Length: 499
Image (cartoon, rainbow, N blue to C red):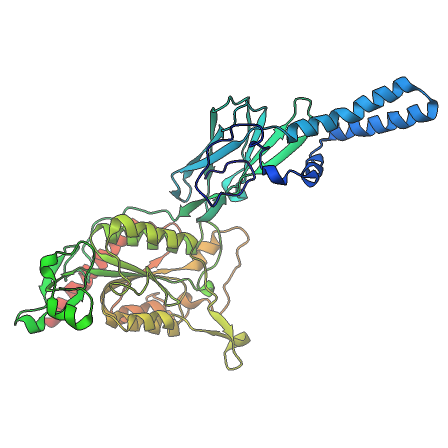
């Protein structure tokens, strides 16, 4: 971020060299031709309490001198009144220009971690500056607003300062614009100018390292890229695709190029990678509580950890929410991404700003209080058009209807793991928590069997899901290993049943 003068908008033409003479210079934040009386009147608004007091005392002394006929008192009054105005004029006409820049290290940080912001102020004029007071605008969740006092900056010199920011809440936070406050030596006037540019700090969910276990749905190549032939019987079976930068020109298929009118290449082999879909339940009615220790934040952090872990293991990963929207999108390979170096950041940036969705809508034919929920049906519709490899779901409170929707998703996946959060356990540990949840949200406690398993969880297990109930304080790496043990036990039971 850099501007030619404090408060001056970024130029639309290439940067110009610093001003070389008084005629080309100007005060910070002002363009030479526009320094009319209106700008000076604006500068008068920068008079401090001391400056206004001097003006008032000078006017009062002048009136008293006129009434009493005391010319000496008139001279004193003129001095008191003119001194602040001279300070305003000198400060306003000061011919130096200042450029500012900001650098974040790093610009993307996990929640509860710190980032350092480096500020640099350059004096690009030919005269030294006076005392400068620097202030950066920072959202309150990142900490107090930083302020710095900079001494005289020599011509062509610069000053660097830094401060730290920290947030317990994920999100995207703007930093800036940078404000520069100029003062005269007598403290009569203060002029504040703002740079126009700002930067963004992205606070992503915390990512936990998961143990490398072998889960269901990985049989078709656990993290290993293998190829399958698409053409075996000759030229007629070649499946062409559009030419991409970097393709070998020896693979150009001239017959298809002539047919389609654009350069086409043979796609005789196509990388086949194991797939993983991470389903995040964002329904507002499925979670209770708020803050960094809430159930929803645990689910978001778990989604980030699972996505990052599967990318590192070589899976093609996509993130799907209950609204049916996927990240990075439907383009390419059905919304999957496999480049862990680049796309992990895309997924984390998306999870940094994900929020609850309003899943309740008013309908005259709906149930209690006119509330009707789409549940997870839109996520099921997004899954029914493709066959998944491994499906990992982070779910909130479920009722039997929603559990049935989730159960049908198992048919589209080679393996399915569900982490069902018991939000009541989170809220029970918060001060002032409600004693009992409403009837329509106590889904995990309703319909429980004699063994204590809630009916929605039992329905998911019967549909073939590996289900784990998550309570406050549970560790995701331990649950991840437990899911592997549960799945191995189920496979052994199925093998014993078949024999």
